[in-house]
Amino acid sequence: MQNLNLLTPEIALCLLGLGLMLADLLLSVRRARLLYHLAWFSCLVALGLVLYAPSWAGAIPGGGALWVVDHMSQFFKAVVLICAILALMLSLPYKPLPDAQAGTFSALLLFSTAGMMFLVSATDLLLVFVALELISLSSFVLAGFERRNRKSNEGAIKYFLFGAFSSAIMVYGISLYYAAMGTTHLTAVGPASPALALAMLFILLGFGFKAAMAPMHFWVPDAYEGAPTPVTTFLSVAPKIATMGVLARVFMVLVPASGMQMTVLLALLAMLTMTVGNTIAIYQDNVKRMLAYSSVAQAGYILIGIVSGNALGLEGVLLYSAVYVAMNVGAFAVVQAVGEHEGSYGLKSFDGLSRRCLPVALVMAVFLLSLAGIPPLAGFIGKFYLFASAIDAGRAAGSGSLIFYALALVGVLNSVVSVFYYMKIVYHMFFLPPRQKEGGAPALAVGPYIYGCLAVTLAAVLFFGLWPESLIAHVKFSAQHLP
Image (tube, rainbow, N blue to C red; front, side, top):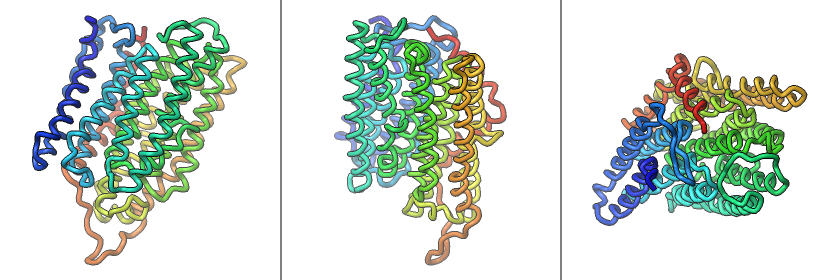
């Protein structure tokens, strides 16, 4: 029990979440929005605890029977907390969120964040399942928080139904793992038995739901479109990154995919996820749905590093996870500003944005180019690491190198395809006139919170694209200290 102090940030977030739910009953509606600030500040404090934890200074990792706190888990916790901080910043100016439930909304977001932090530290399937359920139950309610919005209700129900189905699959996989191993603890294994291989397959399917990997992605477009935009921003990034963190720990370190004879399966999943996400995104006219399918494709890119199974792949997973937060949250911040101003998230809402607010249009173009992997932006550095890891794995695989080279090729081709639909948004912003309204097209009003979010994310995309050395150093340090 003496190691519980290693989980201080997670425990503090859970306790504060309970306090925020109680505060809803005690504070007047006029002061309720103060709870957003309190949740934001608590995430900032938790981020400070994670960044300045002893493990970053090179201390020996520690933990309990169910978890481990090491350099990699600290890295993913920091990334998830940054995402939560930015999502709370976007929640403050979002008008459809009722002030009377500000404490409940903030509490659910804190619970989900804490679940993701538990998840990236988990080394036992019991904690993995509990963490996933904490994330899922909070996310279900957040997705349907706009109770008078039929799309929000529909998206939340679909999210819930798919989540219940994936949880059942994962429970079955955990039971098979226990039957094969005699324990639920994730530990290095020898040659795989058929029961163990089947168990890991079901567990992978459970993870695939949270990471929005094809074909477990069907809930994504409706849930993302209907959810409040700050929630969509959070769900499109944080659960995916946390799930990729635990996938990296399980299938690269504890139960290597190569030992389970699952490398080809994971490679096919990565190629399918990239292709499905990018292909369907081309036909979307709603920008939230377009970015939803884009996030599916992004999961496929990150999965390349896990399939590679080498040091470069793990570094690529960490690096791309960090830069993905900046470019995707920044893009959704612009979408939120435009959608609230226009009353619609369709592509036509972006018509002539450069004439109504040139700085926001330019910033959006930068985020989209980074998502497409165009140099010299941060997205290019992340994709370069991931594709290079696949090529490096192919060189080391000998006769089995074809699957890795194919994976890298499909990744590059999908990046080219993604440029098409990202540039559709740019075309509407810069080459089409604004929609005519009575009194002319009004200028886009962007509040200080969205401007602050855009400033932070834009700085990260540009800085880590032009000078990535500092981030790469942290990534290498986190990847090389795994137990």
